[in-house]
Length: 113
Image (tube, rainbow, N blue to C red; front, side, top):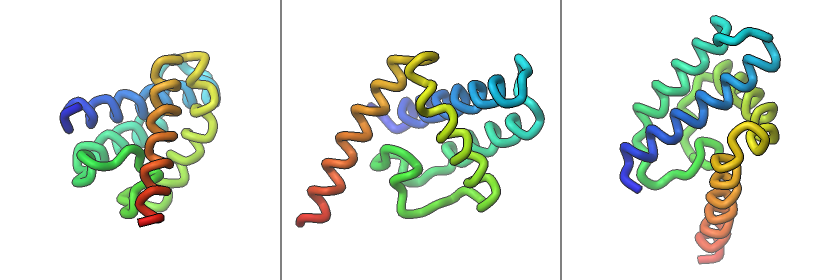
């Protein structure tokens, strides 16, 4: 997969997770101002990520480019939305599990070397 496609997929995924979180926590159809700001920030970070070609997920990255407050907000969104993605976006959720397993194996192998 090329970097552009990967970047767009990551932005789509994070936006879906933020929308799910906002809809369930804040009750509106549209994003509230705080969630809209988080979505814009996350998309901007993805656009500027220099490691997109090799990384799988931000949580596995050595460099954390999110500001501390935004990092806490996105963690909260991920903890809430992650387990619910299987019901709302099953293909995306299964792809994430598969990629996570591959990344875990790759990291373990690199630590052995």
